[in-house]
Length: 255
Image 1: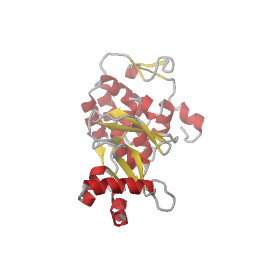
Image 2: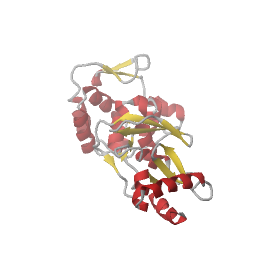
Image 3: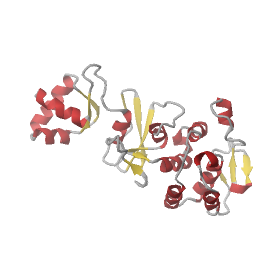
């Protein structure tokens, strides 16, 4: 049965149905999974999800990003996990946020917790050409998701540190995604936050005017009322006095 190991390595991460397709026999597939797992050739991530292990180290040959992307047929990396995949994370988290249309129970594998978040839309979800096992929100969708749910982005300080590393944003995509979200408060928060990075992200004045035209009359809070204690009339938003102070404290970026 060792003849199938090459096929397993090509799959890298797989379900029982993939093994059945490989062997053309369900009983053989069950026996392969049992034997290969016992011999340490594969590892079970969760129910009906397996990864091939490195023959030398016995560690998973699939990355945490690949695992997160393959939990369900519609799962994809989102929020801080997407920031991390795009190379923007300031801190390393032992949690991977995974959005999916199909609900799954949170689980831990190899020291990483995989946390479910309901997928509202697949718009902006991409498969990178060099990482075909990965599904992740593109940069523009990731930024808006994080502003929409700052708590899932690692908190305001982490989000600001991440955004400071972005050198370009496609404002047409941002506008289209904002229209799909269709949330007045998100226009307020997005315009406010991205105005601090307008030059670095190469955003036009027209984009900020677009956000401002959608904010209506409601007064909102960027974060909780205790932290967001300064009022910014331009955006009708309460927020911390200087969100860039996080960068000054960290000393990584000159503002």
